[in-house]
Image (cartoon, rainbow, N blue to C red; front, side, top):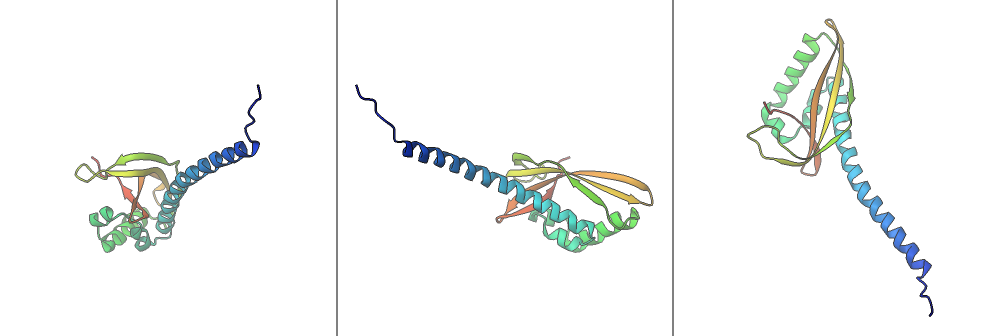
Length: 153
């Protein structure tokens, strides 16, 4: 009885294809997570500089409905910079958590494929050093990643 030989070239090509598909799938998911992280970092860099007009632009439309651009700029500068007596802050962004669905508040529609980050802002001001932690949610809107905060009470 003769043994059938599986062509080595075919096995090699099959293994290469499996590896390429795996890398492609992994790359797509890692890219989304990385893009979500980058928008959070960009948002807090603007906030750090007191450039609240640009940070407001990174909000999801649901957030922009909660406060106008002018109101946001005035409030953030007044509360965080004037009341706390600080010029800037440092921040850290925690590891991402992927949520299959989430909503900004009880009366809003469910959003899919959301990333959640825990952001810690450290202020050194006239009242000492203190941290503020906030969960930040990032979701795609019109193919761009946008910032949201949680309003579920």
